[in-house]
Length: 495
Image 1 (cartoon, rainbow, N blue to C red):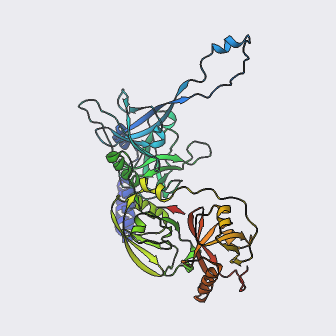
Image 2 (image 1 turned 120 degrees about the vertical axis):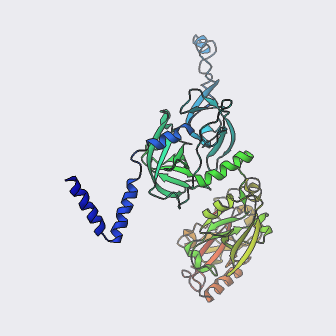
């Protein structure tokens, strides 16, 4: 019976068309996948560590003056332990060794403000004390160092490639760590999504359904070759426990950060020196030469690398160092991963023409605060509306009174003193006190200038007008429709 079954299977296989043969071959390859993660776990476990931190914190001050002087309870309260003295707080996390001489990667939030960091290994009894080599709060990555016993090398793992070419949605992954302080633990799942953004400027998270819980933070996410393609960092959960939505910072981001921390003890990211915002679909018609919403729209160019290279507000950055730019997030990440001092070619769209520039990148950590100091808060009170209205906006040239009232930093432009609540301008978030400094990528100083830009845009067949608006010194572009207004005239990031 067995021989008949095998013979029949062979005959059927020989009679199948080529497409079916390929399908059988693919199924055979799938059958080659491991039925267990045991071998992979044995291979990488010695390089994964548990991390325990200890921090001295001040206790909350107890109530003072509760017991009056001379009270019979005075001696009792004086003999109680000092409630105002310092106490020790501990936290748990995970990490992994990346070199035989003891460099360890974990999350910054695992070791932040710690006085002591102890490393527990999978296959050894003694704990080792770690020192902090460097941290990067922007990506929540920290690099630690332990000293191995004399003459001994530590088992370690290597980083893999987390790009979509090698780590695809649906691929198997394995997470290791110390969930809820239970000790070394393994969980498996797949890559659920890629390029997730949570809250950081340089976010590039791999989403996985492998179980990740508190205590897994800083642990590795392995591919099936035993290479680290992510650092487990966060979960999305209404309960605080794993519901199958975990996030690991991709190795493509982590390796660059770790290399800098190892060499310099800090990050040194490239700095272009511009404020930028995404190009939205409603802006496309208002920008000459742009066919779809793409690139990064420059809103401000202070003193710095971009200004030295000749960049201007209103330029749309479409290509950076040979890479086509889809949006501001992509540009920020590419610039941040570029070496400080590198001469980078750019292509920008300016007044309908492509312009080539070369920018020598500065360093973000030292130049950003100088280029873009924090702006003051805007007053909430709005003045009575003026008489001149364009595009649903009541406008006035800048005066000393308006400058004092709104705390204006711009010296030229039109101050918005009132807004039609039913207008598109109101829906786009414009406020009284905002200053319009450009319209149609040309300076405006008077209402007549703005009306001329409106007329020119309409004569050119445009359906919207691009305005450069400054609020508290921070600029952004806003596209307003020219179709809503009647003929009489009534009617975001640094890099």
